[in-house]
Length: 521
Ligand code: OOB
Image (cartoon, rainbow, N blue to C red; front, side, top):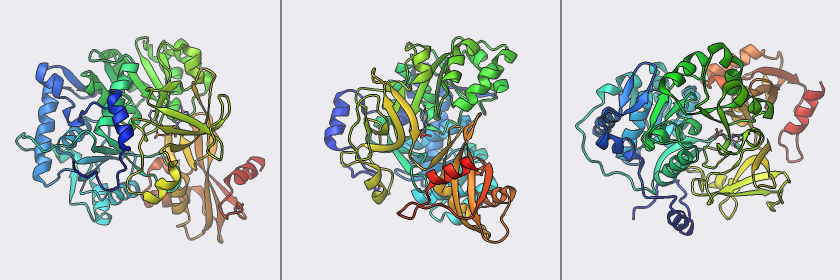
């Protein structure tokens, strides 16, 4: 057997055996996406966008041609390729083509800019970057010196070769990388294997009653795990259904698409859900055939309870992580359970522990940190051995950094968070990352970034600084961060200037104290 990819931590053999025996891991590879219907029913619609419809036969051929074209460029097995594509058909064909040659997509979000794309390319030692933005591509290529190819989305059609067989990956190999929402430091890369992601897509589709007759709407960026594989757009194709790709979750774009395509399943973050419940009447939208997966950030029970009366849709409430754990309410759990809990794990092989500060398991009803282990949960972030020693327990549980309790029925309820991350409407912003850019301003001596409660987004970003001389304004700081290439959603929404930042006894910024100080001011 080939050695695993350097920097990837495989599951211990006894766990891998257990997951295979349970029928979770079935020896599938993601390059087989599109293959089944393309062979038996090539005319069947696979992907729908606002502009066009694409059949299984057409996309399968296109993915083969693109795979051959990429291979001719010298991109091959285990090569990392940063993919920064929005919700377009090219996203699907690019991923499938890369899977087929065993190259590894590193999935960036469409909102990512120079700083994030450069970081991802350098961290993963990527050989290629695929993006729609010519200016960005050039800037990233200057800094990320492993990049040999920069391919613009608009030019992908010309990357084409005669379809042929490739020495593809094996099911236990890494298939692609997702970006973590972060715990400490810069967000890490999450290796997902063919076996584990195939299982995640199949099992979440089955749990939502989604099969080849159904259509899934990707209203969130399809590069995010929630819209990609839970079951998401790729999962919809994995089971032979339709993936409808919207460019945004705006009601005027998606409500007509839902009606036209008879969409049965979609995923939303709570901030967008409230936009839908507020506007459905205006659009006279009939969403009674729709199941909505809501997760990614705190869902207020009052908002959850509005879903049935305002939309006629069925709510399922999800706690998910790109790291691989999925807990959710099932469609027949009832509206109240869906509004108030994040349900139960996707499969019996998932293990949840709620622990105190000494890692001691707590009884049901008590709040502590959530630890997780299972057939989709990674055993190590990519290539960060030291970091992994602190984020995983000795027996392989991931410390999620989330606070939670279990109800007497065994349902998960997320109650808070101990990791230094801001959850801005579901978009995760690592405080460390923003702070490191803020102190680049000559008049900033110290900086801390804190969540700020917000009615619509749940949380916004508050930058707290200690000034050196004349303090900068919020607008100046936002401009600085933008120039430094940070994605827009990471820019602070509010600025507070303080004399000094309180410290803990180990010399770290005491954010709890700081938040209390600001609350009182
Ligand atoms: C999803 O995945 P990520 O990787 O962007 O973010 C994971 C983090 C969790 O650790 C937690 O802090 C937060 O997002 N989160 C929630 C939540 N669901 C996720 N916080 C409160 N309530 C919830 N229901 O966000 C994700 C991945 C797959 C499906 C759905 C969401």
